[in-house]
Length: 55
Image 1 (tube, helix red, strand yellow):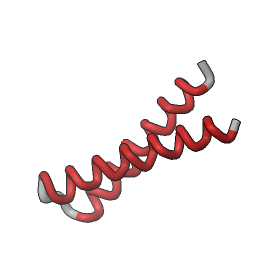
Image 2 (cartoon, helix red, strand yellow):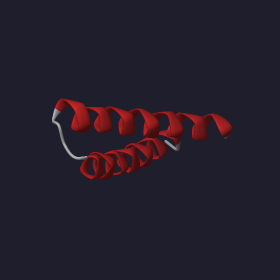
Image 3 (cartoon, one colour):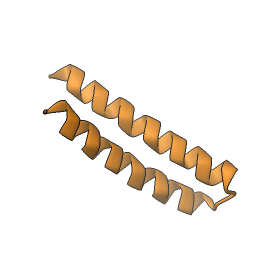
């Protein structure tokens, strides 16, 4: 069970970091916008990873 949560956390952090860096430095977005997108994509990645882990 703990392996599932590690998998979910890894996907969440990876997606959030990727989108934050892309928004902030690739697209020169504001910090607030970058954090909001990172939170959104991190949440979506967590949901997808959770759904995959219980299959």
